[in-house]
Length: 289
Image 1 (cartoon, rainbow, N blue to C red):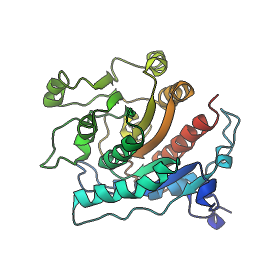
Image 2: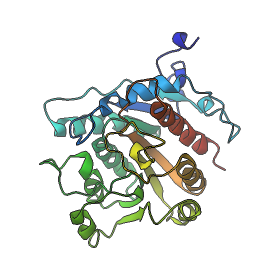
Image 3: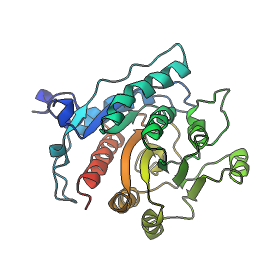
């Protein structure tokens, strides 16, 4: 019975850290959302839904959980300061990164990606980033905050990291103008790049260590209505998973996150899709030739 399973990703029994290749880190942080609130419930809903998944992946003919997946305790939100929270996240992920675990962070709002990426860059100075999103997230600041979810890619770009963004279909005039000077930011707009074009790009991106950041609103709202800032014209399930499969086959992925799920309730298709996408990404990594 599902009720008897541990409240962990996939309902998996707890294993020793040394036996885990992948660690799932819930970060239910929400402080700068600008439309629909609720991203703080995202990690819990993803973990809940994941307990209903089949742990056999039919596409890859694998059981990814056999490689070792450990769900960590959530990082409790620091209400005193955004900066304190960012430092807390960075400190928490450092030991797992340094011990060569693959950290898969579940958000929470998109701002949590910055401290994780910053810590990964310490280990991998040539780190690059693949970014799925509806929004460019390149604002210098938003509503008075430089740590806003709408500024996270701007902060990451300032680290000197090359960013490759897909699914973008919402960008301010200021961000569009700034792109001329942001030489390390490469945007593939949703209205220009779809289907086979995405698969081609996945194989053409430069070699190196990559972090993958997936804002769930990269999907069209018909697939994922439960997100803070939905935008029409988004990507489909097979566009995103097709890209990830091709990209992971030819590139070295060291960490990832999935953010911005704002579930209407635990029993919703959006939460299940998010859980499945996390597990599917792990499957692609595990069966990489």
